Image (cartoon, rainbow, N blue to C red; front, top):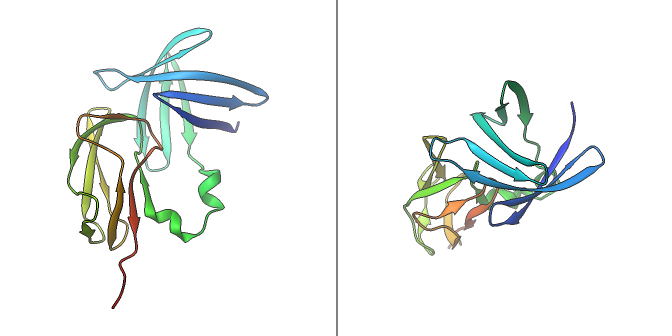
Length: 155
C-alpha cells in the first residue's frame, strides 16, 4: 500500500504527493464519466468506479484500488458532520434547499451527477443550512464542501 496525498487547489487542480514526489494535476470530467488528468508528463484518461470509501481506478490496462482516508477529518471534532462534500468530481444537477432552511436527517439537499450516476447529498442529522456553496449546473471537485449545516437552537 502506498499513501497518496491529494490537496485541492481549486478550479479542478490538485497537488499530489506520492512517496517523496509532489506534482500538480488538472482533472476534467469527460462526457462519458471518465476523468482526464493533465500533468507535466502528459495526459491520462481514467475510469473510476465508486464503492463506499474505495475507488476502483483503471488507467489503460492497469487497475488500482484507492481507499480514501481523510486525515484532516480524522483529527476534527464531531462537528465535521456539519460540512457536506461532493463524493467525486461532477456537475451539480439539483439544489433542493436554500440557506436558512431547516432540514431533517436523511433529507436530500442536492444532487451531483458523476460517472453517469446521480449522487444525492443528504443531511446526516437535523439542522439548518448555514451555507450553500453550490448552484445547479456548476462543476465541482470531489471533496469540496457544498453545504454547511448548523445545529438547530432548542427552546
